[in-house]
Image (cartoon, rainbow, N blue to C red; front, side, top):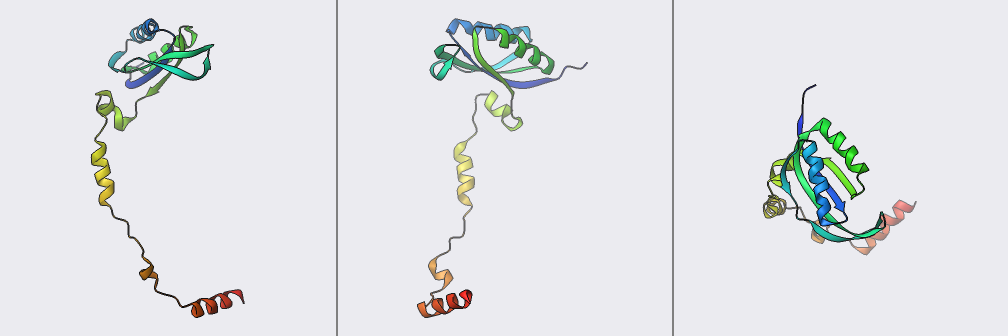
Amino acid sequence: MEQQVKKYEIGFLVREESEVDEIKNALAAAKAEIVSEGRLKKIRLSYPIKKETVAHFGYYWFNADTQAIKEMDAKLRLNTKVLRHIIIAAPLELNEERVAGVRGDKTERTRERSTVEKPVKKSADFGAVDNAVLEKTLEDILK
């Protein structure tokens, strides 16, 4: 069986800051190469998860073998210290930019969109219509 290494992102919620080590250990066990990591933030949960209303949120971008992801996911599901986690494959067009910490130039995309001008129809384009003509047209339609 050939190893296929892909780029992934894992987002997670843990009770305490020290429990981030559980995620790091799972990544190490999967022989994943961490490319980038997000700053850990304490957040208030919209609804209780395992009776917790506050958690620490973080994420990692990493490279790993596709088979190792399944095993890592199963181990994290059983880990009581990890409230929630999600592992997704990084989108192809965003792999290089986002993993490197660069978010693409929004101003450039805005400029591209703003250069395309949409034709605006003015009332003069429709031509002025007399009320008598309008009434006659309505009568013809209603016949």
